Length: 292
Image 1 (spheres, rainbow, N blue to C red):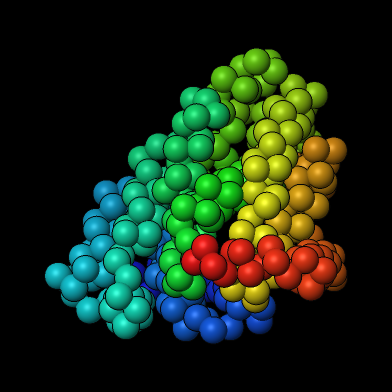
Image 2: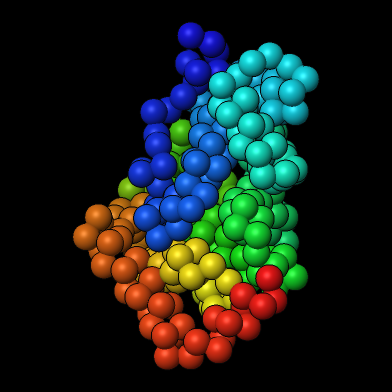
C-alpha cells in the first residue's frame, strides 16, 4: 500500500455534511465522484494527525504531479485526469484545492474575515465551480452565487468542528480579530462548553454566514440543468437550517450536525421548492437554459 493510500481516513462521499453526486444530479456522477475521491485523499493527508508537515507537503506535491501526468501513478489522480480529459476540462479546480490543503499544513490561524474568505476561495469555491463546469453552466451567471454558497458551507463546517479542529490539529479558523473583539481566546475552544465570549464570536460568525446565504439564495434559479438546480436548492436549505441552529447552539457541548432524518427532510424540501418554482414559472428556467 502506498503512503498516500495509507493516509486515507476511510471517510466517503456519503459521510459528508452536504450532498455529493446525489441522485438529483446523476448525469455526471462519475466525474464528480472522481473529483471527490481525489480531493478526499488530499484532505486526508493535510488532516493526518501524525504525519510531519514537510511530508504532507511532499505528498500533496506528488498528487498534483500525478494529476498533471508528470509523476507517479496515483490511482485517484489518474482517474480524475482521465475524467477531465474526456470532458475537455482543465485541472485548475483540483489544483486550487491543493493550495488550500497546503495552507492547512502551514497556516493555523486566520487574522480576519477577509483572510478566512481567501482561504474559502481555495478550499470550497472550486468544488462548486467544478460541478458547474462539468454541467456546462454559464460561469458569468453562476460563479458569484456559487462562491457565496460554498464559502458559507465551509464556514458552517468550521463552526461545527471548531473544538475538534483545535484539539486535534491546533487549527483555528475563527478570525482572530473577531475573537479579540468579543474578549475570547483560542484556548477557550478546549473547554467543555463555550464561554459567553466564545459564544458571541460563534454567533457573530453564524450571522455573517447568513449574509453569504442571502447572496446565494438565487443560485438554484440561475442554473439551467434542473436536476443540478434541485441539488443546489437542497444544499441551500440545509445550509440555512444549520446556520440558524448555529446562531443559538453551542458546538462545544451540543450536537450541531443534522440527523439523517433532518438531513433527508430538509434536502427534499429544498429540492422540491426549487422544482416547484420551475413548474410555476417555466420562463425562469427557460431563461437560465438560454443563457447557457
